[in-house]
Amino acid sequence: MKHLTSIQAVSRPFAGFWMEKAYRIPKGKFPIVDRFISQETDANTPITEMVVNSLVTNLHEGSVLPAGKAAAGARHSLGRGYGIRDVEVSTGWRASWRPAELGPDLGRFSWRQWTYAIADPRPGDDIR
Image (cartoon, rainbow, N blue to C red; front, side, top):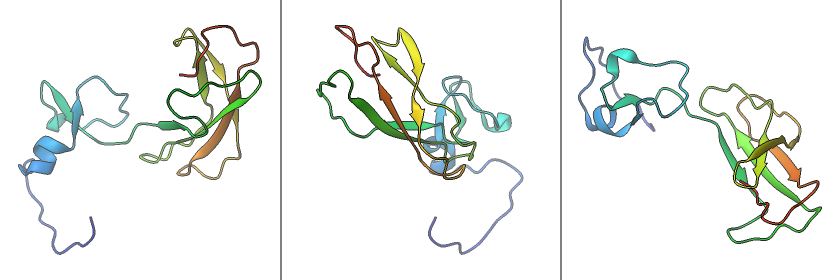
């Protein structure tokens, strides 16, 4: 929202496009802490918070990570500001999860950098 020109209190859910159709996610598919139960339908629920996002920042699609070289990335929890306490990386198609090394915590609403090196690479290992 760029500019606020008025506020109107209503006693029932707003029926505009953005609240009725757009800002919704499939029900039961995302871990939501604060649900807005009165606004849920059988199929979807309003977005009340953003889920954690993570990026791999030093590789591109099709890259090969040489043994001993670390994958690097960043992760955030901007929606609710829970902060990032850990990051886990899976190799070999999510068969196992291992902790990544975290960079400094710059605050609960900031991105947190991480790195992960495959300690004992095996044929077929890839970062997920």
